[in-house]
Every structure is written in structure tokens, then in C-alpha cells.
Length: 117
Length: 109
Image (tube, rainbow over all chains, first blue to last red; front, side, top):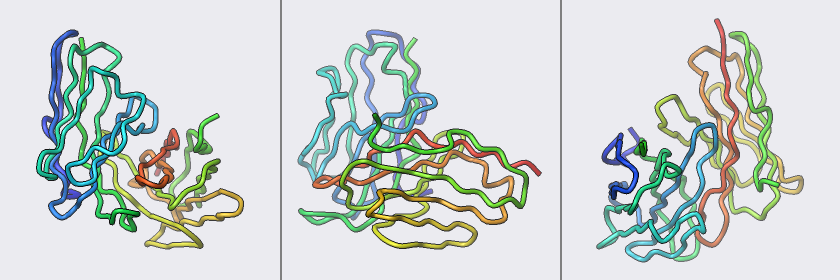
């Protein structure tokens, strides 16, 4: 257990439905990252928060995806109108860093596996 | 071309063998991570390197910044080392990770 939790661990949904995932980082970590991993591939960066500010979004994050981190604590990732191509493992990671850089490692949650039927 | 390349993609070994996994990258980085992922998805950070060499138990990681290359070595491999090993580089300014595709290691008794 790394101290980063994600819920739910598994989600099965039908195409067109909306889903929301939650990540609870390690409490003193100000940086939070979302990644997506499809079968047989390495994870890919989706988005990054420093405290409550979303500072970078990947081009992979279409308009159907939205992420929030209210109050700089937990974060949610919502996918609207899910498509079969959204099926993947969604990973959250957190770390501690200054405004300029981080010297700490990233701690990963167990992931949420999404299956879109 | 991927910014992070790993080799080999798959590796099988007999228990006790010395194992090397290689990682090359093509971008400027602030650090490099070696990660371990077991079936079911959980990712654990093994090492974070910005120069030189680190050792933890039977695992050794090295990095050559000039050549943009890193290696992960496992000495006296054991079946419990079976996992996917992923190399990832940190890019400034957000320190987001760019991942390789991973090396699937299977160690047989």
C-alpha cells in the first residue's frame, strides 16, 4: 500500500454513460497526476495538478474528460459519454514538490480499471 | 519514435540468473524512474535516478546522462521478481512521467 487510494477499483459501464473516478493522494502531497494505461502498453500522461490548479492537460484528454481537485486534496476524473476506446486502467500518482521542481518520487494508486461495453 | 524505448520487451530467465533491462530516452529529463508493475495493475517505484548508480537489495540501477541510457539489473533472480518493469523519465516543468512500454519478466524455478 503506497498511501494513494483510488475508487472504484473496477468499473463496468455501457457506452454512452458517464463515469467518475476518485483519487485520494498522500495527504501532504501537493502534486497529483492522472495517467491512463491500455493493455500491453506503458501508462500515458493525462493531466497534472499543483494544489488545486490544473496546470497541464494532455491532448489525449478530449472534451469528454474533465478533472478537478477542489481544495487541493482528493481529485476526480470524469468521462462523459464513454466510448469503448476509453477502456483502460486509470492511474493516479502523487508527490511533493515546490513551485519549480520535485525531488520526490511519485507514489501510485492501485488504479481504476474501466471497461466500456 | 517513442521518447522512451525499452529492451527487451519480454524476458524469461531461470532462477538465479543475472538480468539486465535497458532504457534509452531522447528528451531532456530531470530524473529517471524504474517502476515495477504486478498483474492487477499496482505500480511501485523501485528507483529514482538523476545520476550514477543506486542499489537496493538485489536490484541495481545505473544511468548515463550523456548517453541518455539507463539499465536495471537484477542479481540472483527469483520467481517473485516476475513482473513488468517500466522505465519512465520526468520532464520539466511539471515533472510528468513519460513511460516506456515495459519489459515483461518471467523467472522460472
